[in-house]
Image 1 (cartoon, rainbow, N blue to C red):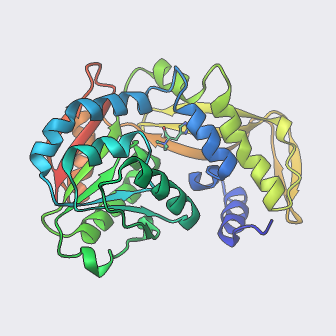
Image 2: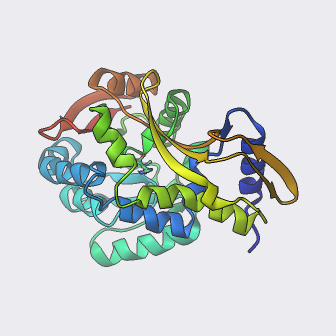
Length: 307
Ligand code: AVJ
């Protein structure tokens, strides 16, 4: 298999820096996406089921505020459970899933077409993180951006702000944005969600090392590493790390690396927001919150904001 040159660059650069860190997007190869899907069904991983139930409950109200005839632009290829809740409720003019992976986009668009025969789908292959323009035939329509899943939490606040500004530029004035954000909650619950007793999140994290060995000709001794979820209180985020259990040396594409016992590779951030922090982030990104909904336990928030 020929590796993505960006994967090689990110891994070699990330392992040469201090502290070691690799961008989270590389966790999601096909095995990683499968494992993430399994994570969303774990008893201790509350975000997916909490957000889905919340979306289901609030959809009549969302539909009343959003109205029909919009182009719904989802940043990411869309989930078969969450996206239909929105599209069935609001009668959009178009559904526009945007994803960097064309193959994934086409496969998921096909499944959604089957589920929602009445909604015209217009997939766009683009890297929404870099900022992008919509096809001309959609420009005249009013827009609703959809960014569920607390994916915004993967970005450090400076990048999250840039991303929200890109969304605003892509969608234009008068646009609305429906976004999911995970809430700060007791540390034990957060740690359980990111270090489940079943070991699925550990397998998801360790899969990155398998991918490195396979795609980048690596000799990383995977058994030497263990998954760790940490709550970083000052930065308000869960961090995933791969911690070396002993001093180790390995090569990646011929290049040597060494790590000392206890040293880690930081692989993912998942920022959690309180009500003020979440809304301030939206405002900093150019979006004015209009309504915010949460589940009864206040575990997860969905915010409707306007450009
Ligand atoms: C897909 C980024 C929302 O941060 O909760 C879940 C990813 N990582 N368990 C999250 C994830 C480990 C997830 N997001």
